[in-house]
Length: 190
Image: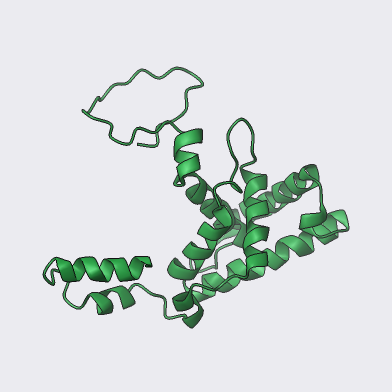
């Protein structure tokens, strides 16, 4: 069962609290037929995004972004939440990373070493910063900014990110406004 079906059933069970649950949910879609099928990106593109995300948040003493399936998360978010123009920028950005890798390293992104990937993404990030400094209202988003944001969101809202990289208490109990924090402690997920 997908999320839309579950929400429609909950709306019906609640006695029609949300009138026209299907119409309500359709209003959240971006109208893209690929988005409705959940297949905006191919499996190869999702695997490619996993590698980009792993370069941004690599495995250390905690699992990295690839272990959290951030590529699948990006596919869902871009498919379900992005407007068609941003979807196009994002998908074109995947190809742009590969082109930049060939230009910088002489080979595609997936064939480069971890150090080469890191250098490439740092140069693209520098390009992003320059773009954002000159960006005016109405200018399109930069593809790498979207990739970075989705990597961070996908990782830190995943079970791995929330429980391994952050401190997580499923039921925190009473409210404590002042909790001691020692330098080097993990941030709280809850």
